[in-house]
Every structure is written in structure tokens, then in C-alpha cells.
Image (cartoon, rainbow over all chains, first blue to last red; front, side, top):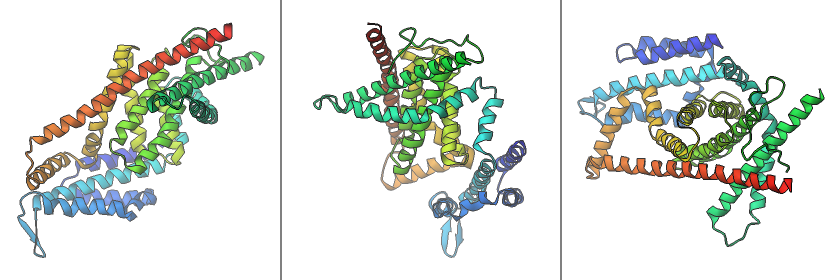
Length: 190
Length: 217
């Protein structure tokens, strides 16, 4: 993971250093490297929404903003904004591809380990509790909302919602206490 | 459901070491799980429906969850831990690491942790935290877009607004009014959420007291 974070930082530095003059010899090697390290990161370019977004930045902005001082195929556009748009597109592509590369090479378990390394006290304990109680939480949430629906029909919708939330929170705290008692009982037994 | 709380508030017993899981740890785990569940369900729904102010709504619900949780936990760093749990649950839900929401949850949790640690648990700190986070949702896209596209994006936004204002004959000074209106909405939402979270916490605490009294009788 460390290796990919280092590569990621190098690519991000390249993105921040990019300018109209330097973009091609900075951007192209980065695209090539990302393609070699994690080809899936480049799949973003096959999404039509993403392509439309890039198209709008690259061609929409120079046609719409700035002094229309250049012409291509009889269409006037702003050369200054075309330069800015190109740099913006290259910079954003490098950042997005780099993020996809590093996340594609990182598993959720490694993220969990990262928190542990950050010395977040009791993270592994807290996380395992969270995963254990998830099914119970879903059950409590469903029950709380069904229970509250039996409240007087003439009561205001916000009051009903408020009561539902109170029941949910009381249930959650009850679950916490039960879990705590069970753990203590289990520990004493052993 | 039986309650065995020692007091009207769940007591912190972080003094107990290693083998015994502390009550605070359990509460952090559970509230972190609720936050994570909410991020998966409501978060994806709001994103899918592209509801305006979706980020602010999601932040508001998160605030209610972690601020209520924090009321019953006396440990510093608990909101950040809840955020770490919620962020990891969100990561697991997709299968791969999604950087944007992951960072957003951690930033949110970090800001809330700092504010609650400084101002302690009271109605003012709850309102301040919610308002700050609600207002942060306005500037968050500008910060992230500034990082992704660079400084030029701000000039483009400003120029685009001027151009649109010229086309529809709108005075550019209206930008300030529009911005002010947007900020006011976010401020009101944050204020309401902070007020609501504190009231909810007090009410839940009272409900538990009532249940305890019933049990002891």
C-alpha cells in the first residue's frame, strides 16, 4: 500500500505543477504509468457522462467566456480560456485517475489497518462491535418505526417522526447496554 | 428490553482495562454503525435522486446521530471514532474505497470533534457544531473543485455568472443576495438540527430514567 501512496503523491505533485507549457510532458507519462499500474483506473473515459463533462469544459468554456480572439472552422473562441480549460482537464484527469489507481489497489481491510496505525484508540474493537450489532440495529430501526405508527392518528407528522426517533434512540441505548452486559458476563465466565 | 444503566446517563467506565469492553466503546461502535448505515441507505438515495442541498441534509442527519451519541459518551475523540467506523462501513458497502465520501465523513467528524471538545456538551455547542458543518457543506464543493481543477475554476465561475447575469439582465450584485439566501437556509438548518439534537438527547435520557424507575419498582 505504501508503494502506491508514494506513486499517488508523485502523480498529484505532477498535477499541481501542470501548466500550458509543461502539461504534455507531465500529463502523458502519468497517463501511461497509470495505465500500466492499474488499467481499470482509465475506464472512466468510457462513461458518456464523464466525456460530456470533459467536452463541456474543453470546448464549452472557450466558446462562451473571454475575448473571442481565435477562429477554428469559422467558429470564434477564446484562446486564453482554451488554454485554461486544457490545463484544467489534464489536471483533473491526473487527480481522478490517480485516486482511482490508489483506491483500486487498496482493500477496505487495509483502510481499517490504516486507522489502527493512526493510533485511533480501540478502533479495531469499536469496528468489530459495529459489525456485530448491524443486524440488530436494522431490527430495532424497523421495530421503532412500526411501534410509533400506532401513535394517535391526529398527531402531527413531525411529532410522530420525533417519537419514532426517540424510540429508536432508546432502543439503541438499550442494545448498547445489553451488549455491554453480555460481554462482561462472557468475560467473567472465562 | 431491560436496562441496567447505573445512572440517568450511561456511565463511562474507561478505567476498566483490556479484557472488559468499556461502555463507551460499545456506544461508539453502535452509533458509528448507525451513522454508517444512514450513509449507505439515505446517502445513496439522496445522491441518486439528486435532491437539492442533499449534502446539507445528509450532514444534518449525521449530526443528529453523532451528537445524540456523544451526549451519552464522556470520552474525547469519540465523534472521530464514530466517523472512522461510518467511513469504513461506507467503504465496505461499495466494495472498493471511494475517496470523496470517505474524506468528507472524516472531515465532518474531525470538525465536530474539535468543537465539542472545546465547548463541551451543551445546547450552544450542539448548535455551533451543526451550523458549522451545515455551512461547511456550502464551501466543500468549492474546496474540492479548487483542488481538482485549480484556481482558474473560480474565475470561470465568476465569469459565467457575469455572462448569465448579462443575458438575463440581472445585476451582478444579486450574487451577494443569492449567496446570503443560500447561507441563511444552511444556517437555519444547522441551528434547527443542533437545537433538535440536544433536545432529543435530553428527552432520550429522561425516557431511560423513566424506564429505570419502572424496572426498580
